[in-house]
Length: 271
Image (cartoon, rainbow, N blue to C red; front, side, top):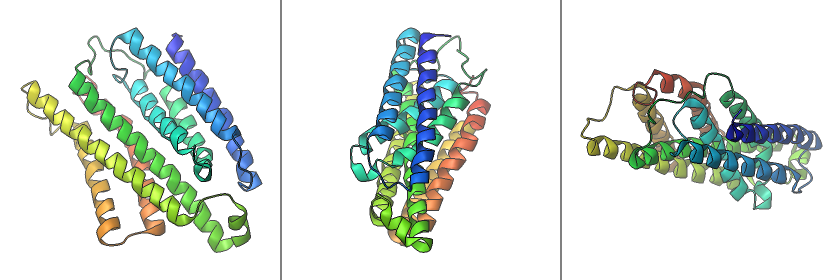
């Protein structure tokens, strides 16, 4: 096994340990705030980043040219964003919700047959690489929004059915959790919009018409329209609380369940 993939495997192992620790935190009711969970994901992020760098240097291009690299990049975006958010103590418990997601994505990425190198790198052009990077980071940001949304739903459930347990938790107020969901959604939507824009710019630079009928392009526009509608409903029509949060979670679940299928069907992105 190549060194970069071995390093990524170690990162996934740490995500697994972090998931076990998250179960412990659940059983303890999230009453203790310390750095163990954050430290585990920080170590996993360091190994994950090292794996991405090693892969990039070994291939001499941006490492986002197959399904393994794409999924690894999405999970790297999630853990990297969490490392920043986790510096604020009230949001540190987001890691307990992110760990299972990172573990599942990591295990999926390591499945045999996903790490297939094309004879010619698909994203060797800098503009096309920027397009892919922005889209994948946007997917990671949608994932972080869903993770914060899960934290919101747990706290809202406890406030409704077990107020003592909710008060004992060290979670931030629901209003702040909803703000985190909203801010991460806006960030992800902007990144996705920029990703689509750079894709169109690349098509024009290469003197090709944008492949509007490409399955992955159709999928990307579908995701863009869904989140645009969700943000409009939130801003203009006051859709808040559980419905807004559940929609953000559902959007990311859709992304993770359909991303690989449309990617494999795309002759442009998976030639």
